Length: 222
Image (cartoon, rainbow, N blue to C red; front, side, top):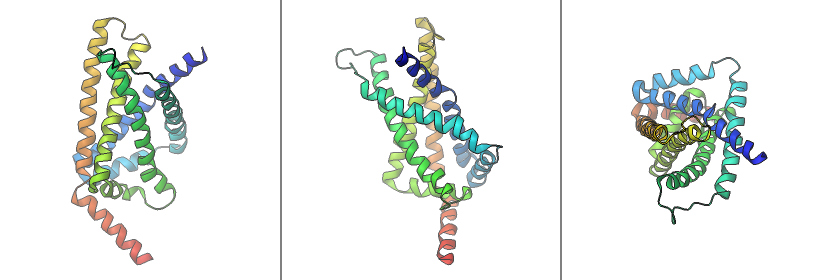
């Protein structure tokens, strides 16, 4: 029974509140595509200006993410995919869910280190985060890794939502599960496209300007 409840908590935390964390990132980062540096910075400033933002992030994002990620790694280790024996779509989705779960967890750790951790250490400011991402996406290797990361995140989120609806008894019948599958895969496509457009936007000249100004100031101060 302990394993049952641990899996249920893992499933629940993947949707509430971590889905809001992903969607918030989609909206904030898409601001770079929709309104450039100014709109992106406004989104970042809004989030960091929320009351009790540290405690909100700690209890609604980081601790749930830690549990979901670590327990997810355990599930991936315990998983026994059988796509070689049974070529059903659910078997493939199960396999991809485990693979993208590992990739997503690694990507989030990397992304948080490049952004949140660097801000906390005083190496960059919130206003310079756009320039940080610009440097990442201008490198061909890290740009490809970021593409893999955001697409993995989008799939893990969307397919995980479908799995949540099934395992929690919300979509019971075959028809309901087919409809929810189409909707969740549509969500996967939308989230992936928005993330990719955001990455392309971060390659813009205005984000390069942020990096140039930052480097110039560091040179002068040093």
